[in-house]
Image (cartoon, rainbow, N blue to C red):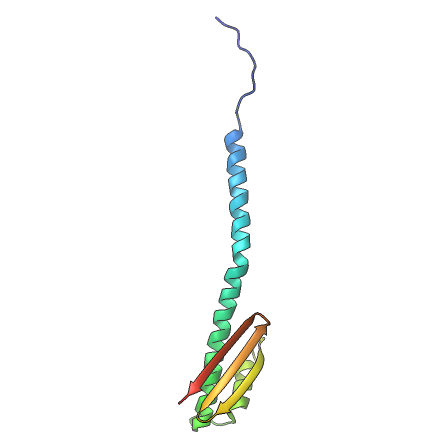
Length: 111
């Protein structure tokens, strides 16, 4: 029989590879959270702008009481958004809201 010689083995290399892959996936997941969160915030802001414009248009048509832009301000007051513009043009209400300089939503409601 031949005596066993001790050489460098690859024992544990699969573990190191698996840990490296898991670390890469965690980093990739963390990096993808920022754009996904911005898209979700933009969608929420767009829904709020649409609802505020509809409420303003309802008050313009006489279906609800109040002045259109004041109704819009009341709807937006509970959220952390800023009203950029609120305009009444003819029979339509235009609303523009902003959470941050990069996340802006606009909506129009009326005839």
